Image (cartoon, rainbow, N blue to C red; front, side, top):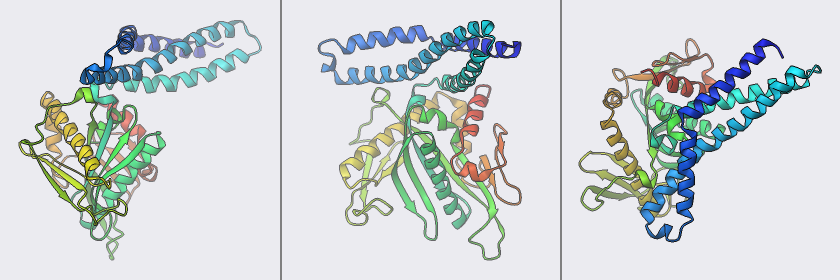
Length: 368
């Protein structure tokens, strides 16, 4: 085994130890054991609210404990292979060690990214809302392209998606849409996508073939766990309106008033859901979305910098803060204006290849 491989392996082992200590693996394992003992005790479910809170806490603990424990087990295997490689003249152990080092490096980087997501909501599912902005028909088409981009990203990363609400535009594309993306750490990964996204291209809707700039806004809110719930007086604080579904959603569309729109009177927050035939199910989903948005507002009140950033993004067009530009003409480039990360292949990005942008934002956010 040469010195370079030895140094690489030792560096990986050191990073695993640092990660284990920074995430307090021992403390999390102790707490997990305590919760499991409580769950096995008689009468655990007598207090449903407390029980659900503990189940949610255990789920979030497991998201850290399981992969970190697997990393520790692999590090022990690496130490053994390092010893064998020093004595094995055939080179087989060294080849096996090189393969393990590459595998561990990828898993370690993924775990280090998760370590950057320390807020309780980071491990949650997410609601992704897309709103067309300035740019006319091009903006509506652009909003539909972004919807597809996040759906493809979800598919590529093994997450599930559910269309919650969609409003089609007159000529092409959509005026707005909301999807739920479900899986571990979805909100933590996507929270940096919030803001204005700008598209520059030759407009397919312009007979003169002129270059067009169009905008769409992305908003991301966590699908909060029951133990992260906030109190809402549904009778006094919220206005409910029903209407007929108008977008894709099955045979019930335009036949029954199953769609639900909720307005939180004091904040003006509006959510709507039309994806199910059942008005009851649409109401339940809309309530969950409203709780998530109000929870996020409360979080932002505690974080003035984040609140200021979201305020800057209120205008969806020229004059608002653009977080990312997708240029299809004259050059081919996608650029994030916060991290300066770029890609020269916008087709791949629009097909859902977002992980490099997501990772660069998470690392950038640690120092900004």
